[in-house]
Image (tube, rainbow over all chains, first blue to last red; front, side, top):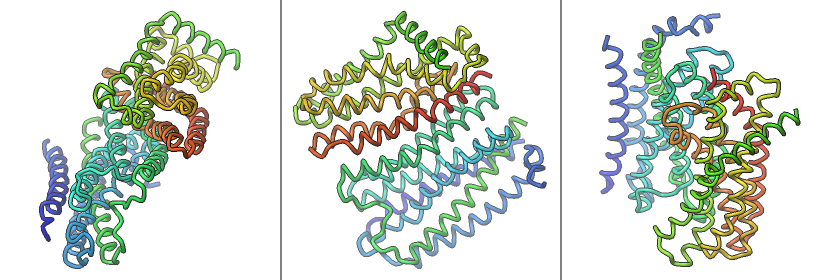
Length: 33
Length: 230
Length: 222
């Protein structure tokens, strides 16, 4: 990534981690009952 | 006719699941397409090198953060006007996702700023406006959380959302004015010197992916709210 | 209707007069906050002169916000608010009158005291006029927008801080234009643009905020 690896992967990583966590939390609520 | 039938939380409940599944699938497919375009099709930027690829999530996230706020305000207005419970629930369901995208826009903007401007935070007009938008989202959620009665919470936060949505353009304009005064000819973080068509395509596809994702998340969340409140 | 408004304003002023300490505390807060900044950033005159408009404006914002809690709480507690809601006078007009009384007691004094703070910051005397005018135009907007927040958070726990979170983002345009007017004048470019925008904000707020405040009061009183 031309030396910018941390920034690019840091951005994408945190983004998709956040989105994943949100969905996991919501699906957990669905299947809780 | 069909619309009003689905206006009841009970009848909307199963429909929400269907929508969530389809939207979720669409989100995944669009994201894969968008990331492919973003990393394998779009060329390297002449000035910023590979760091600019953050644009493929920064800009779509920023767009979503503003779009979701408007949609939230729409549901809020509908709830106040028609006194429907589901409208208030929809607004409540959208807020956390909107706040999340606002945070993502700020985070990615910050990480984009470091390699390009040498600093993690720039008082760029858009980043500053995004920060204030985040506060608006938090205010909405905090007000809801502070009110016990769900109907009063719906109505109060709806009014707040409407006051907010009217103020967002005012805030944006004044922050932009403030920014040009203090930074002179500033280059916005979201402008690439010449937007290659492939870059634009990548951004649009990712924006659609985020949109589908937001729909799925909101549907799931509104199901949780319906379950709680009946 | 005008008679009703006059009565509301007069009554609120009387109440404020009887609770002088509440009013004084908010104004003291304004002075104290403005005095804290030099302690924090150092007393270098050029720096203070540069940050003076912003500091004075932020202090005015915070002080105005602090005094908003009183706007409806007392009336809510003793049942007067319900009477106003049920009364014959249009609620929008009544809340406008209350906001006016609030401004007279917490905003207008800030306009008067600000030049003294400006003196502390060694702001050039010709700028006092722009400063006072910007505050004169801006503090009513703060009262009106703040009243919306006060009405929404009526009777809630954690009210004061929650009110701050709700209302401060909405204050941003007023802050930018207000401080900006003085800064432009300081740079020799004249603050008329910002002052005109402040005036526009004031007019729009005066026209629409009472409607929102009345709606919020009804929502909070059910």
